Image (cartoon, rainbow, N blue to C red; front, side, top):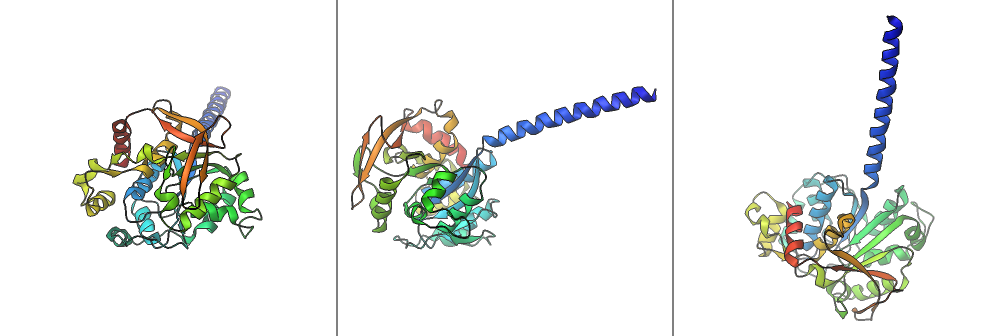
Length: 323
């Protein structure tokens, strides 16, 4: 009898080990589908960058992305960003601080968000990018929804306490993809490349010197600019910080959501066929004033995002994910 009990116990232990190992392997495989991301925002006077942060938080909760850091590419809004993150349970996500001035009026919502006692670490944005990349065991994607000043600074950076590699070497080793919100197709002048003096300098340098071995995706204004998102939150202004900001801005019925569209597409890229998202290889040139020309070419250096669904389709999906 004891022999049978020992045999049954041994089989049970062996089975539990096999099942446990299988579950462990599944978890690891599931974790492989989570995209590590640094979100790089400008968050000036409008509200679309707040939407981008909200989506990144929600997609982190849904295990679509892992939000490693939020960097700002203009100064002055870091306390507001930290307040938002802490309020939503992301007090461990560090915030990158920019040396570049914010050339817009100081919006009231910055003070509102700064009321939350934040626990987020705040350090220089380029240093945070370098540290995040150096410490990651897997390549990290950077999604930028504003000026390219931090990417410019990263590319020019030299070895430091985080890595002996130069910025370009670190990008080649540790950046999986760069997703850029900017540009007018096929040509035109865009806010993110031209609005302030440092915008065309940084954008032009990035596109002229980017290493084509690291995919760079361009999200032009015609994609997300016409999407009027956030209107579904208008009855939540007393309890929801994004709804409050929309109301305070006077756009509670919805606001152009270019930045939100970029984050939405990045987080749901594996379902791109379902959502009508395709790619076109292209080249981009930016002149000294920030005006761009985009030329579709089979041998192009970059990828231009295209969409086939109508604006209402994308708006409704983003609105659902903003809740």
